Length: 229
Image (cartoon, rainbow, N blue to C red; front, side, top):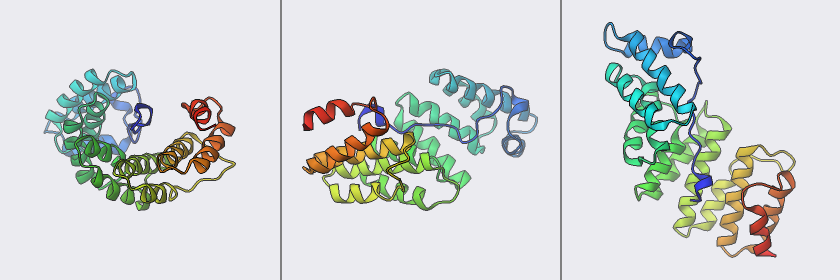
């Protein structure tokens, strides 16, 4: 997958600048899961980890999140933030373990795109598809996370030469030609790339042109169109 199209990791609920500003549900979660007497310390470590992650200091974020994990091993949010920090560093095996723990503890599918990409990096591309299917149908998963999961799975299918299946999956993300947010442009780009790889160059060119109409500077669309022209 092109580097620009690695899934975009993001915490589900960005907290405030201090531990006491964490959303109520996360504070309640840590009060339930942290070791006795360590709740406030766990909140402070988690808050610091998120702050560092938002400042693109993934290494520092992972260090703080590990300390939070020592205090609240059963906290889904702590495991999620640690997984994201590891993922950003390209430590996919460790990130996979943490994200699978998050998914198991929380029952949520909103980070399936990260799990899928970790599995793909580990040489298990076929396991990305069920995760995308789950993200598409699960409640509470934002469009951006659905799109990212589909992008990973479709790219995995294309890598295996399953172009028709990849395109079918991409088309399950509901889009309109006249409305295109960032996640839609990403879906269209991967669709155009798969079409080109499948030898369907006219369809690929039309899709790249559709992207260019919304954002002429998007990705390497101008170069791709020049190649196709």
